Length: 368
Image (tube, rainbow, N blue to C red; front, top):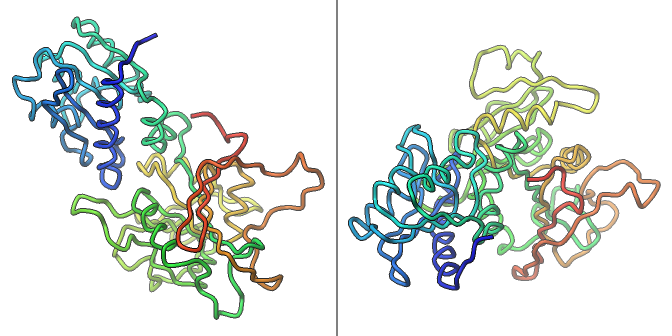
């Protein structure tokens, strides 16, 4: 077991904060930060800014220059050991002359998966692994989900009243949560690589599903994924307005699917609708690792039943809408308590008058 000092913790926390800066721009690559230090003195720092560009270690080593020799490098994920669009980071660390490397967690990607750590150790560099591992993995939960489960991390966002309703059906109640809550949704959208909705939501509300203001010129707008088994959504819908990429998901026998259009995905279907498992596989293969769902009760219920939801992002407004309002989700009737879907509270925050709850399945769909 590796020993980590208080100073190690401070430098790795710094590296995690650096990695966080790439939250809106690195996909399909993971978010990674790096700090190079001699004791308490930081001589270099960097983070991965966008796919195809230099990795975190490269930015940190450039800043450190010759001061990297004999230093310790703190990296939030195992340095890569293969040459893709950039060079191998393990070799850059070896060439720099660092004496030790502290890694938050191993990279399970098959072209790395411990090899970067092995190369460093074979070069005589001390490597310690496991510092702030959970925090680092949380930062890249989508990437890890794709590598280990071949599907994105799925966050289901919903807003509801105290009595579990989402909207009145008379068309006069568009928003039930506050401006603070809706601004918070923009934050979570920006961290996602894709936003999934259903045809019913698009036809009823004509949402745009974009991020109101991207954080920087490097930030990538999430891909809007529209699940439309019957091909009902018209090309004039705002989700196809060109303000962000879109993926129109239809039945594979639809004429839309036969047009050889990369913005259209044809899927098989059964009596329950389009194949959601296949959808998740395809999204992962496209590099869309973090999926946010903003949909009506039918699609939300289908995802929950299929055990494809990793987190509920639930906004609760302090009001009652009554029995005529729409329910939160459509689920089958449960006859026994053992059949119900149970969740654990992960985080709770107050946003103006509303509460934001983050809940995760008590029994996770599958381990990360």
